[in-house]
Length: 175
Image (tube, rainbow, N blue to C red; front, side):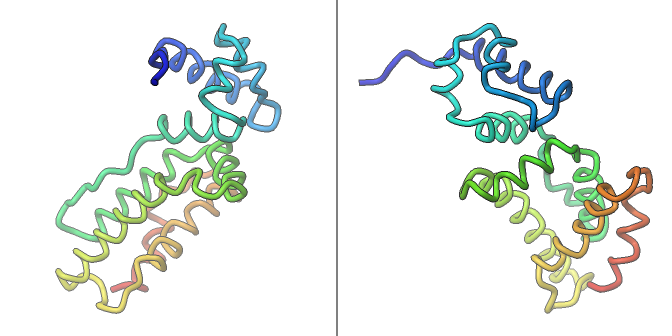
């Protein structure tokens, strides 16, 4: 026996309320009660969809974050730089807080991350096949060494340095 379909109107209201409150008060101060009140829906309507604040915020952010699509420019360097730029453009304190908190909830962001990892894996595979990258290049290390410094730079500075300046320093390690 299936129940009544979920209201897309309620889903949209909860998403908008969550994004607005995240911007106004941040992740730590956000409460499910404040989201329900802002959206004009009952607490049970919210709790039927997401059991915790982390589940709600992860869902909203991961569906709202700009997806990383395969640029397939014919150049592994350009493809990875495109992904790096997309990553930096999508960074926010809330996104990082959710990723950090999600480590406590196995599986919460696995699909989201798996899709992004698979994309980097494919770009590296193409780069190796075209001779742009060494045959022994590990896609996991490419992710860590190319994207890690960009995230750190964003965290530690005002984030105004273009991604390609950091990227250019690391790129020679793979060729």
